Image (tube, rainbow, N blue to C red; front, side, top):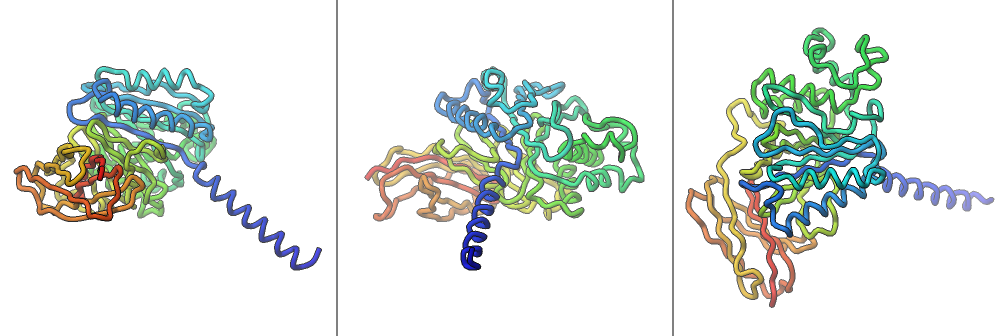
Length: 401
């Protein structure tokens, strides 16, 4: 074979190899999902259409499990129950191998009259053993609260061990709260092999939460120290909950959020056919979601939370758009209080921004906002998003010329 032919063959092989890497790489990561009902709603009170949207997310989650070979789990927090919460079901097999068990667990999660928060995890092992209880969520019980944690990424266990034990000089806390997967014996011998990095992350977060007696400051301290020790935010895609809120952190577009009038959802890989707008988390951003709304901390790693914070800060609500459908202009009302300007963006169903403008901060009074599409905007489905650094609300509209 000629040199030229050899080069062509090698080039084809290289391109094929790169293509395989591109295709496979997204599969080598756990999948995360979480949902929180808004306001005073429970899952059973969500509208029929939006209940179907959540089911579609879990259907997509189910099919993603075909590539997540090391198990799945679902968990539900009820409206007034935060103590002694345990996952509905854990399995060490893909959900596609546990079809009946998976859908029974989904029915249990969404069919509860008091369910407020749901959490799901699909596992592909990168650390520790491949058996139950390794499918997240990991649980930690403290002061009558059931903390749960799911994670996508890989973190060096030596870094986590050093952070928890102050570089091996103080094992008191670790011995008081050993990982479920610890096999006993010396920490650096055979018992260490099965320990999962994700559980160590939860243990370190909880150590800082206990020390600071504040969930946000403790969470922030743990994240900052892990990053300063050499861990990339892209390996720290986390969903952490105390049963009242979802605390979400990660690298750029490691997780996506969407919202409706009845619920908020977070997914690693959202469905591509649900008609919702999914917004990727910014790098090193922390988001707090609860029944009162969504709060964004885009500068979470550098922001001084010690100076005071509030996971229920000044906020606004956005009314449904009216008339809807419309053929001339559409209006909505912002109600609340925020000192920031509110950014109003209009997106097409494909995610293209078609218009943008700003309104002044809100002083506690209602503010009616209108949008008049320009002549070159075609008929179709659009999304109006009102956002500040810490809040955003989105409404779907239908424009008919």
